[in-house]
Image 1 (spheres, one colour):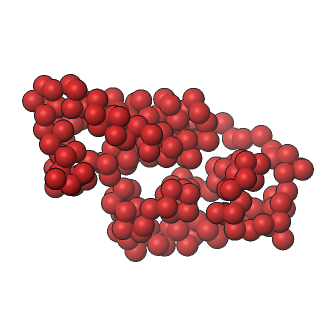
Image 2 (cartoon, rainbow, N blue to C red):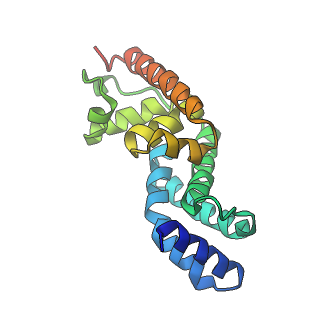
Image 3 (tube, rainbow, N blue to C red):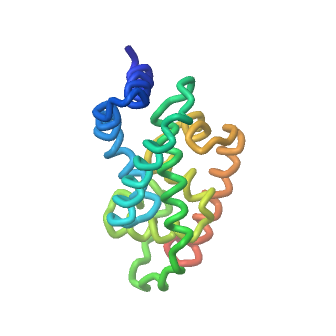
Length: 181
C-alpha cells in the first residue's frame, strides 16, 4: 500500500468515527506543515498557530477531501493559505539593519546561514504572497513544478511564470537593500 493510499484509508476511517486515524495523519505531517508555515511566516509562534489551525480546518472539512487527490497536497495547501493570510495581516516590517548587507546573490546559499537566512526571509516578505509562496516551495522546500502546481492549484505554466517573476522581484528587493553586488 502506498503512502497516499494509506492516507486515504486513514481519512475514511476518521470519517467513520476513528479519531486515532486523524492523530496518525497529524503525526505524519505535523513537522512538514510546521516547517512550511515557519518558512512563510518567519515566526515560531505564528507557524505553530497556523499548523494547528490547518489541522483543525482539515478535520472540520474532511468530508470535502477528494480521495483521488493526495491528502498531503490538500492539507499543505490549507496550511500555506493560512500562513499567507497571517503574513498579509501583519503591519509592514521595520527597516532592515544597515549592517545586514551581504554580497552573495544565490538564495539557496544565502539561506544556508542564520544571519543571511533571516535577511532573506525579511526580503521575501517584501515580495507578493503569490511570488513568495513559489520561492519558498521551490527553493527552500525543494518541491518540483508539478508538486507546486498541485499544492497551490494552478497550472505548471503559471508556477513557472510566477517563479520567474518572483526571482526577479526578490533580486530587485535585495539590490535595493544593498545585499547583492
